[in-house]
Amino acid sequence: MIRIGIAEDDPASAALLVEYLRRYERGQDEQFQVTTFSDGADVVAGYRPDFDILLLDIEMPRLDGFSAAERIRLLDPDVIIIFITNMRQYAIKGYEVDALSYVVKPVPYFAFAQEIKRSVARLRRRSADYLLLQVDGGLVRLPTDDIVFLESVKHRTMVHTVDGLHSVVAPLKALEAQLEGKHFFRCNSGYLVNLRHVLGVTGSDARLVGGHELLVSRPRKKAFLAAMTDYLGARLQ
Image (cartoon, rainbow, N blue to C red):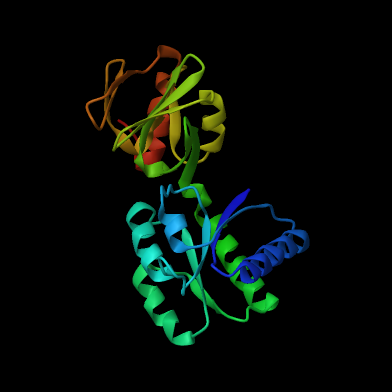
């Protein structure tokens, strides 16, 4: 499910964009969760990095698309931004907020579909580098490189990152499946470790960045060391 936000003060224009997205869904077998806002101020208010794509009208009465994008970028460096504009000269300014592209009004379906296709392709390319977590109160999108290890605690999983901790209502096994092929390995039944953050193994303990020491179970130690060797690209002597 791709989450798309639309900020457009003209109801007819907003309805047209929603119609185009539904048409794209049917033609390309995609699924979009679409949320509409009547002004840039409404998008920014209480913004969370929950969206994959934002379609921002440039000219809005309370907070224009550029100003909204500048504030959003402080909270969300990853969301794909597409500007909707009446004037092409605004497009150059979009690079200041790392906008993917712009569509000129009146919006033709073909041009719009091409931009959505490009946005979806970008999402597909980078989706392997992120883990989307359902936490209490919303969603969190974490770069997998920032995850140090995951810990199973009863019916929850504690995700330890370089910047903090997230408590997720999901079993460790489910998250492990999402991280398959991304250099994560179980050092014991309760911990899934990001090998990039392992500083070394001493006795039965793996030392990780942040001062963490995790038990490497005896049955898993040989496989854990082999995984470390493969990750580092050298053989342990």
